Image 1 (cartoon, rainbow, N blue to C red):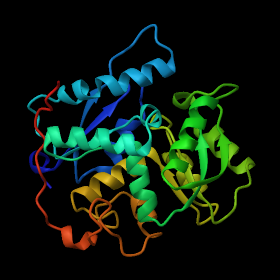
Image 2 (image 1 turned 30 degrees about the horizontal axis):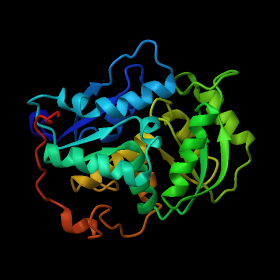
Image 3 (image 1 turned 120 degrees about the vertical axis):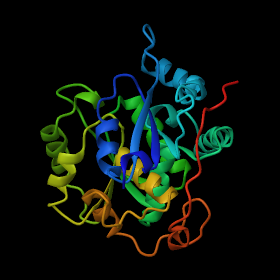
Length: 273
């Protein structure tokens, strides 16, 4: 597909997040062009204060795309949406989608969409967050109807810092947990690099491996009628698709095949009020 005619995916990320753009970009290329708007730098606020502010300014940050027409947008920050209930998250994204005239989804809701697609009802949560945010994450999934059987807390050295976790640390700590071979593992946090770890851990077993960025790419492709098992799909998406049966539209319940070739809607400037 020519660059000028490829669908455009908007990605909203925290200012210090280095992983979301390259991972999502790799996952949706060459089917999509990816465009980014960043949350503001908020000096003086602790992590929770920043996450709360992100939800407040999200309409404005989406509005920073201005007249750039997008076909879909994903909010690539799970932490801020864990402060909401799943119903509150849906309401916020529905409001943003209505303003935009095109779908807007949080990474957290994209995870729920993908978990539904692969038939996951139980999770092992792999979390690099500070304990209080891990607890919020677990509560979010359980409120959405997913059982969290176990939590594996991932450290970068001696501290919790998603942006600083190395592949070696992530793989070692997951393996040390000795998880069941049939578990569905959810690696939460859009800012934790996961590609190399997924490739390594994928050789260990047939476990379903979900990440925030993988789910965001899955949702974007599904929303625009591009199946994850397509020939142009990233190997990680195709691996995930192998664990699914015939998929329903996560928005309407209609079979995904019914949407193939459907035209994408445009996303212009998001009105801020």
